[in-house]
Length: 213
Length: 213
Image 1 (cartoon, chains in turn green, red):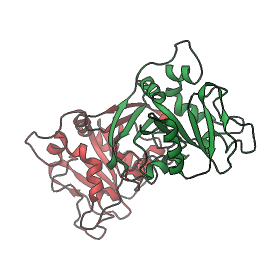
Image 2 (cartoon, chains in turn purple, blue):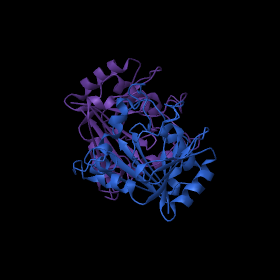
Image 3 (cartoon, helix red, strand yellow):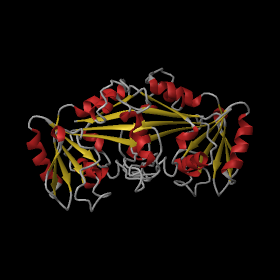
Image 4 (tube, chains in turn green, orange):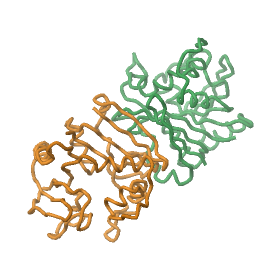
């Protein structure tokens, strides 16, 4: 039972992109940032419901598979859920289609809560307006013996890292420079002192860095 | 004949540290940032004149050896030479002792030029108050068939990167978070599009990332 984070960041440390438009809400930078991850066999199967067995099967896929293993609840910010893009749509159910890949309770931090949404496949979105610590209590309780993931975005992740509440942080660093966005690492001086840090490079060029307690 | 850069940066992208004091002009963060490099056999021999053969001999030492190979001239900023720390000392000859490790002409960018200084071992410091492009012309001419290194600091390196004048950029990323300082990557969005980028992790935990044209 651990609190985990997995994030994709650029070599200059950005976990968000800035080229989104109403027509292309992720922008094209987002695709470049997560390309190695979305090319994995695991992502294709788990998120795109592609059962052809296609996709990469190397180091990146090992991390993609680990991403979904042993997680019993997820916490995410309002921006990651999409409330900043669709604030006035009462029917908005996130970016992940009718059968989201989480398959566990997902706690969405928001100042404008709405009723729970139960999706196909085991995902239930709960909308909560409490402190990060209180949400984590609820998520740990929902996860039982399993892990809780802090899914993002980077501001939410930083809050949990700053509070010392994260047991394992995995970042997949894409060797591109985005130049602007929200930085994961701001105001986290000395974070490494509480962790053992290891690194591994993938065939794709992605650098996987893991902080473990 | 190439223009090369080698820099040590933290995981959050800082190439300078901020805990220096008059008594400890490098601060203790600097030691943590470059520890894997200064532990190499090559650094100990070349910079500390330690001929015992001690020091690490793995991936970090491979990069340390490459650092000194084939360089015919060096360019550095006034801050790297130490003028910001010792602006009023006409006898200041840099941080590197009587026999600096460069052993080639070194061009120091400064708005307050002074006469050349010739050191033991082949290093001559030239102090120049011209544009980065003009200094590079002089350095390339001095280097003959060999490479020119842009030694630092990060602001000078960024100027040369922004101007498209760097053929090979090697960064050694130390997995620590410094939280403040001068960032190498600021305002370099899309830099990777002009290069092939490769990564390699060392036994020490250092991540070596190389941009090659």
